[in-house]
Length: 235
Image 1 (cartoon, helix red, strand yellow):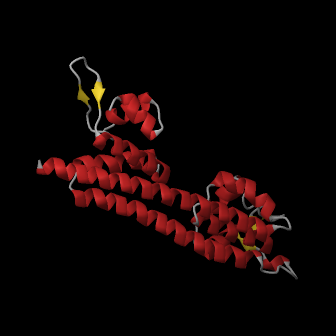
Image 2 (cartoon, helix red, strand yellow; image 1 turned 60 degrees about the horizontal axis):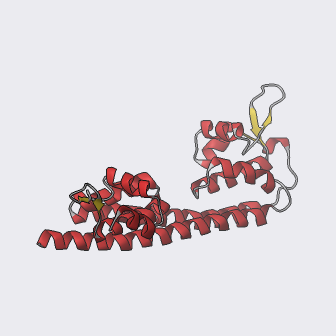
Image 3 (cartoon, rainbow, N blue to C red; image 1 turned 180 degrees about the vertical axis):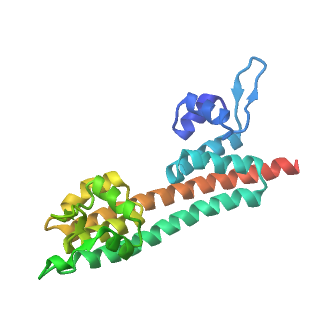
């Protein structure tokens, strides 16, 4: 196959194929007498594996895994792929826990609130199992905005703000980044709190499922790469 043939079948540019070869994702191409690259089935499957793995685990990790399939013992290369599967499994487990916790937290009544019910930053940090600096960061990013003690000017978290912090904590554990949470939290402070959490977590579920499918596609191509490598070694 020519460079353009591989690019067309993978769905990328010719330059991208050359870059993958340069980065060791594709084995070195054979050169014709006139200097043109020619690629075989192993190159195509490596490029297809990269397309899937990059969508599943990111380009840096994808390159690391595929290079291992070219250079390392099979057991070592497969261990890297196992780790990618395990990370997605952990994300799914964290997401399930976040769904349960966020649903419970958002439905808790906050009635008969008294000033003495507020928590200091150190008390809330200890209750959540995070550092006070984490709560300060959430405050700076407008995720959880506490009140200020009128005399000491220290942060005080009302029951509603404690609940916000607990929800942020669960969503962060489930893999939510700061930027999406900045858009989500103002909505959660309004009446549709429970529905918005469910919607946000459903979007996360779709994202993980999409990446799992991509990892499956990448793994299928890697199986072909490994088989071709074994045939080459036998030859």
